[in-house]
Length: 153
Ligand SMILES: CC(C)(COP(=O)(O)OP(=O)(O)OC[C@H]1O[C@@H](n2cnc3c(N)ncnc32)[C@H](O)[C@@H]1OP(=O)(O)O)[C@@H](O)C(=O)NCCC(=O)NCCS
Image 1 (cartoon, rainbow, N blue to C red):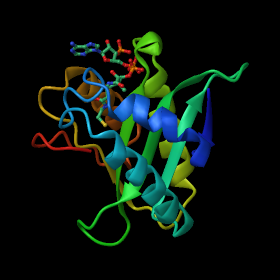
Image 2 (cartoon, protein in one colour):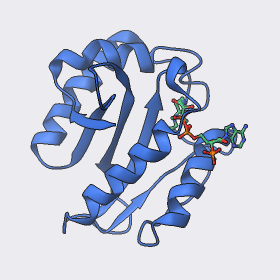
Image 3 (cartoon, rainbow, N blue to C red):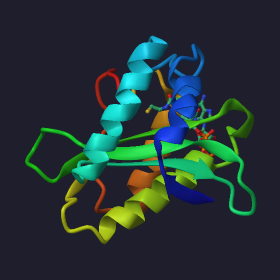
Image 4 (spheres, protein in one colour):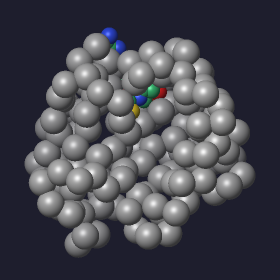
């Protein structure tokens, strides 16, 4: 799997993910399309400032998009703390895409001295997301993975 930084051309992917009832079931429900399009643009500003690292997940051997994953700075426990979130399109779920790409992101972050902690705030009802957090938390000792109160990521 490859992680490719998102671009303006990925706005429709963001709409497909974030306006969908099933995809947003555990993260606050579907968002209005206009909000998602505006948020997509704000993500570029954050990426240019080095405050966010947002990627689309693409298959290794062809151009099919499998989902999206990213991490962004949060104002908690100092300036080097990040939160991460993940989306995998329904037809690609259950094949290890989220767990594998979460590990890829963490390995990238390991070489970035500006990142000290990465947290995943999976809602308590989001069993799949919590399973991923446990998996990467167990395998990457440096990553402080917290399964915390229900909230949006
Ligand atoms: C969460 C999400 C990204 C998972 O993607 P995925 O690629 O299907 O996940 P993976 O295949 O890598 O891993 C799923 C793990 O959850 C486990 N799992 C699945 N259903 C489960 C359940 N009901 N209870 C506990 N664990 C479960 C699987 O067994 C698997 O672990 P394993 O590999 O040890 O068997 C995907 O379901 C999604 O996009 N959901 C909507 C968006 C979302 O909620 N994102 C998270 C918040 S940002």
